[in-house]
Length: 160
Image (tube, rainbow, N blue to C red; front, side, top):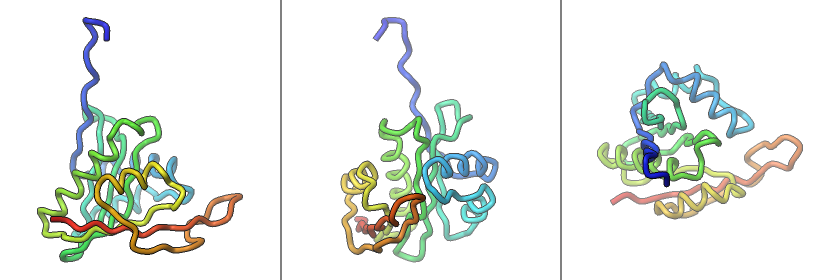
């Protein structure tokens, strides 16, 4: 590295605020065939049982990703976790998911579930590193334009 160059500042994770719903919807639309609208994201995040976080650039101006999870007693389901494609591959997804898991643990959640497309190797590797294992599948679950529907894998993680 050039001796006078500054190392890039680290992104930060914050609780979701409704003012960031449009940016989250734009990221979701890039990642999924059926993206969620800003209103859908804001409505979900406003539910008392939903835990919502956003990943922001170091200046907290740009949304880089977000995650929504619904908690019910000692169980929770990750509803979505998504990182903007331009910010993928640097560990931000792991940081965001670990933040969510830690917050769930504080709330008493002991089991976490999620669904992931069977062909999403990067997500599957992340979930495996964080202790998730497959407990089921839904064949032909995700619609994909111009392709056969994809299988959804159901993953589970026990929290200590």
